[in-house]
Image 1: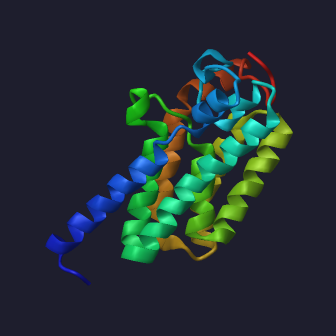
Image 2: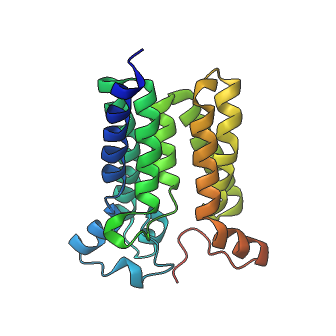
Image 3: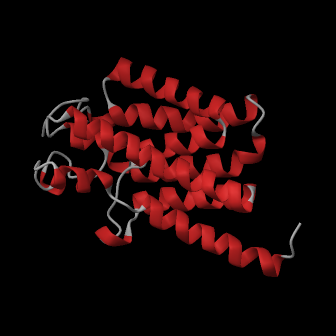
Length: 202
C-alpha cells in the first residue's frame, strides 16, 4: 500500500476528474443541439432524462439517459484501471456530485438516478442489474420516475451486502443519501399526490 502522502494527491486528482466528468450536463447540451429549447424552461426544469422526455423527443431522452449513466461508469472504470479501487470509489462519488452540483450550472444539477445506475453497473454488474430491475419494477408500478430512483437507491445497500460486495457499502450509502437529498421536493410531491407521471408534460 502506498504511503498516505503519496496516495492523497492521486485520490484528489481522481476526485477532480470524476467531478468534471460528472458535471457535463448532457441533457441541456442535447436539447440545445437538437433544437428542443432550453431545458430549464421545460417541465420541472431538471437536466435529466425524465425531463428531456417531456420535450416529446424520445431519442434525446434515451441519449441523455445513456450519457448520464456512462459518465459515472467511465469515471469509476478509468480510476479503477489506473489507480485502484479506492480511487475508483472516490471518482464515482465525485462524478455523482458533479452531476448533482455542476459548477457550470451554478451547482444546480440533476437528481442523479442515471448516473447512480451507471456507477452501480460499473462497480459490480450484478448489483447494477439488481438496481436497474428495482427501478423498472417501481417505475412501472407507480409510473413515477422518482419512485424508481428512490427504490433503486434504497435497494443498493442491501444488494451490495447480499451479493458479496460489502467493500462498496460506504459508497452505496453515500450515493443513497445523496439521492434522497436531491429528491426532497419529489418526496414531498409524492406524499401530496402531485408528482408528475413518466412522460407527462408540464
